[in-house]
Length: 402
Image (tube, rainbow, N blue to C red; front, side):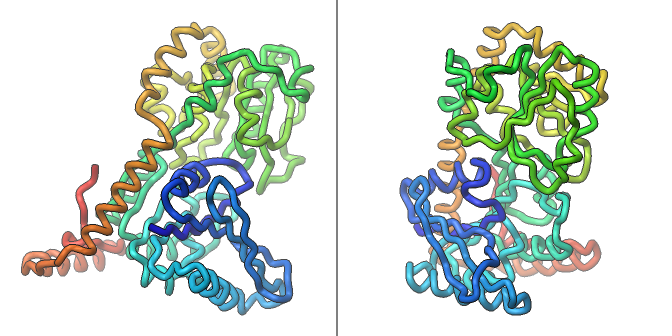
C-alpha cells in the first residue's frame, strides 16, 4: 500500500500526530508527506527529503502567479504521481484546503482517509472556504478519523464511518522524564518550583490566565517551551518568573519535563479549543508529572474524572489546581497513570487505523449486490440532507464503528 498524505503542518514544525502516524506507516508502506506550498520561486518545482522513513515533499511555486497557484500545484502533483507511480495510492488528508488541487488524484485513489485532528475552522486565520471544502472531503472520504471524543461527536453527524482515535503517547520516550537526567542548559538556572508547559504558544492559550497566575505566585517559575505562532510575541505576559525558552525538538522534551514540579495546560475557552484533545496530556503523565489544566472537555473526560488531572478555570481556581498537583503523591500518581495509559500507544493507534483501511480496501474488491432497500434508504437520506442542509451518507455506504 502506498500512502499519499496532504498536511497543513510541516514535518519539522512540532512532532505530533501526523509525524507519529506517518512514521509508523512508513515501516511497512511507501509514504509521501506533502506539505503546503512555499511561494519562493519563478519555476515551480518539488523538493524531497527523507524523515523517519517518510518522503517529505515540498511544492515550491511562483509567488507572482496567485491566480495560477492551483494549476501549478496540480501539475507538480501529477509529476510526483507519475514519477512514483502513485495513481492508486491511499490518499490521506489532514487539511481540506488541499482538495482543490488534489481532488482529481483522490478520484482514482484506492481509498480516501480524512484524519481530522483538529476543528481547523475554529482556528485564528482559518480560510473562509475551509468549512465548504471540509464538507466536500467528508462526503467523499471512505474513512474519517478524529483526534478526540468531542470531534467524534461533531463529525459522526455527517459521516457513517467516523472512528475516534484520541491523542496517544510514546510512553517509553516520555518515561525518560521519570529518571534523573541532566537539566538543559537554558533551564538549569531557573529555580523551583517550576511549573512547565510545552507545545505551540498561540491563540489557544489563555495568556491573561498565565500572567495572573505568575502575579499571584511570584515564588513559582512558569517555564514555557515551544514556538510562538499566529500571535504577536509582544502580547505574551512578561514577568520575572515567566521564562520563554523557545521551540525544542521532540527528543529534548523529556529532559525539560524531568525538571518540572508540575505541568500545566492553560488553555483558553474559545472556538479554537472547543474540540481539542491535547497530546500533551498523556505525555505529561507518562513523564510522571502531576498536571493542572483548564476545563477542556477531552481533558476533563477522561483524565480529570480519573483523578489524573486537576482542573480550574479562573486564576484562583487554576492556582488551586496547581497547588493540588504539587501536593500529589508522585509514586501513587505514576502507578495510576501507568494503569490508565497501559493500552495507549501510537503503535496501537496506527495498527487499528491500518486494519480499518485494509477492511475498506477488501470491501471495495468484493462483489457488490444491489439491494432495493439500499436505494430507498439513500433517497430518504438525501431528502433529510435537503431539509437540514447537512450532507447525508447513505446506509449502503456506511460501515459499523469499532
